[in-house]
Length: 78
Image (cartoon, rainbow, N blue to C red; front, side, top):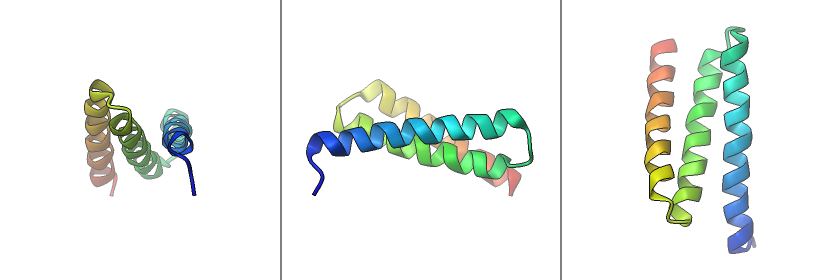
C-alpha cells in the first residue's frame, strides 16, 4: 500500500515525465502527434490529481485546460 506522500510523488513525477515525453514527440515532428497529444492528456490528468490532492487550485485549473487541449489535439489528428 502506498503512503500518502508516495501517492503524491507518483502523480507528480508521472505527470512530469509524460509531459517531457509529449513535448519532445511534438517538437521532433516525426508524425507521432496523436501519441504526443495522448501523453499530454495523461500528463494533465496526473498533475491535476496531484494538484487536487495538494489543494493547488491554480495548477488544477491549468491542467484542466491542458487536458482539454490534449483532447482537441487527439480529435483533430484522428
